[in-house]
Image (cartoon, rainbow, N blue to C red):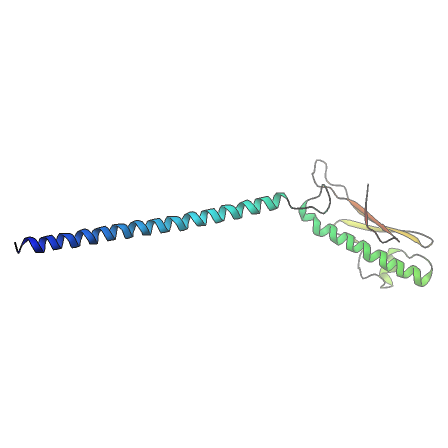
Length: 161
């Protein structure tokens, strides 16, 4: 009888210990798999939002690439700057000035009348003026479009057809 009691106690202790280790090991794997699955879901949702936002990215002008938006904004700002300088010159001198005169008189803070392939031209008639921005045509078969812009004494930039 003395032998069976310790053996029974030993067997019970091993069974309990083995059962506890096995269930801890299963819980450890389950927790790891849950964390991995959660991470995978978060990455998938993030990628979905990224893809959706790229497809819905607005363009500054129809038919232009999103990367052109910065250049086109710069062209519009240049046109506004040129028109403002011309308006100031007309108010002070009662006549229009050419682009070269505006640049040389420091009425316009530009070194050259161009930006990223766009060339600016200024036409005057009395005190009325129009400033245009034109780009060389896109290569044949290219999906990129280079819109032309104009501004006059009304100070509103619009796209030319």
